[in-house]
Length: 332
Ligand code: AHG
Ligand code: MN
Ligand code: MN
Image (cartoon, rainbow, N blue to C red; front, side, top):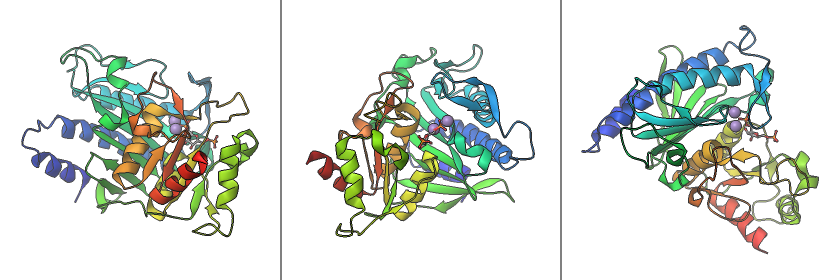
């Protein structure tokens, strides 16, 4: 079954569905295919590798592919007719729907290219997206208020992973499904019909180079999981530095991903990952797959409302037993 067929089938199950969401998604699928096509030409085309002369609102270097993916996805989505407002990692403010285009009932927040430090070394990268129903009055352009909603209210969240193959993994609140792009027919085909986090797993993924900046609780948790006497034995460290790729591997194999705050540095006092378009969509997928997603205080990511478009958070996500072990540990 192709992703387009799947979306139509899901729509038909809902008697009151209008088809707006299915139409919105077809624009996203189109954009994902084009970004994937360009990623696959890295090393051959000028606009794929290297940095631009700009830094984004968060002071990070913007890679050429960040800019390309952002422009492509923004342009494909803003004219789809079913969105009222958008937000992207690469835009300081909300992205309005241009005058003259239909204003819809959904919001769209996205990280156009996740893991951009990996682009130039041919390592897996991704795109993350999150969709909510608007809060403000229908028919008018949407506002920041429409975007700053609780994670648990997401209508859909997903990611596209540009790995050894290109995959789209998504949830609409009824489990998690995965589609793999078949380059020979240009379609995303259902490859993972019901993705579940293994209940436990021995992978841990964290940037351990930041160890000296961590809180004492975080340090002792990491020391703890390396001990032979823990339930699952010493864990295996796997860290790519692309959230999408690290999360996806752990989703299939079982384990835990952590991005804590750098308590002892000025760099990321509240964690590095952005709530709206990184942590929140990944948390929705994690919970729908039977896993968990919390911050280092133990609060569920999906219960939190971002205060601003680019608010950062700490993130601990993965197999249920592993996150529970982390929680028990920080409460000690
Ligand atoms: P982005 O490329 O969209 O800015 O996100 C990078 C993020 C995330 O993908 C990854 O988990 C994390 O940064 C890696 O950070 P470190 O290099 O600090 O480990
Ligand atoms: Mn990112
Ligand atoms: Mn990014």
